[in-house]
Amino acid sequence: MTKRPWIVNALRALRPKQWTKNAVVFAAFIFALGDRQQEVDLSAFWLVLQAAITFCMVSSSIYLLNDIKDVEQDRQHPNKKLRPIAAGELSVGTAMESPWSSRSPDWHGQTTCPARFSM
Image (cartoon, rainbow, N blue to C red; front, side, top):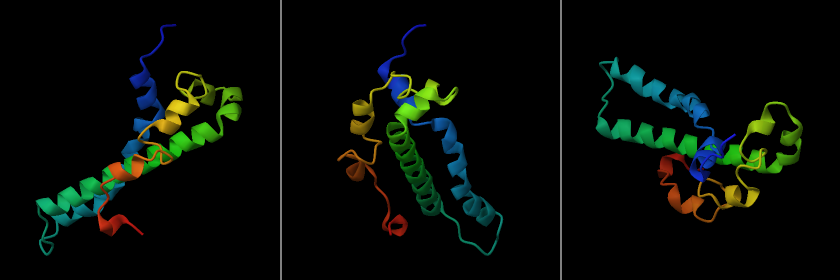
């Protein structure tokens, strides 16, 4: 088996296949396009796009933290043992230092989350 490049393992650990679930934030915008009483402009689209990107970043950071926390149990699982961290293809330290990890000091500086999304 050939070893995958570091960047490929890092991207796999972020689980981009799961990002499609975050497309639900576009639903209200799409329905508003068909409503003649709604004023929908490009700025509304950009806001929705920012929300989707933010959801992807947050979900990926949670996946990383979960994989770090459960690495030993995942190594015993028939399917989860193939994940990059459990398989040893991406080290726990590298995952924790990743800008996508919410434990990374860079994460908060990289999220340009509009005030409307913050609590």
